[in-house]
Length: 254
Ligand code: NI
Image (cartoon, rainbow, N blue to C red):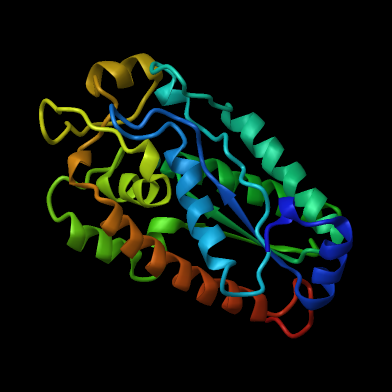
């Protein structure tokens, strides 16, 4: 079930069946000469939308702008600074928790978001702690590539040239979902350099075409299909386990 295609009455009804919601979260940023700018928010969205086709789960609108300051040297990148990102995540959670959602799972598609999402969770829990009250919600962060068996499959598909940005696995996922938007280019070098991530100017000098350690030419829609199928199944298991956990603040938890 997709929140943006539902009415408030349907969400009110859903809340009588479940208190869990999934929020795909990512970033809109350059992904090399062939990777789509939306790659990092499209991957978790594609996986969550696939998963909800076979189970009664609820998927929120995709939080599609993240912490991408280091990619601002490339046209099309849109970034929030960490403090803005943390504040916005806070208001998403407060909105959903106010309606009664108790388990909020962020399915993330961008490594650069992780520190800020975790900081946002800490801010939200701190509010409750300082107020000496239960938070009323539990938050979970899961990167799609860390879903059970997805990472090992991706490294088996791409033993050489996977890299860490504009990777063939994430590009394969978008190729499967959006075959009309598949791009091609010749790469030099075939496998991009690796190195540290600092600010945008330094990033562009170190990684001139935007890739980090990757050879995106290895991506195929078929490999993407395999990853989406695995990830969607794993996400459903994860949502089920998270939903089964004792309600936040309940005396059943230790
Ligand atoms: Ni990415």
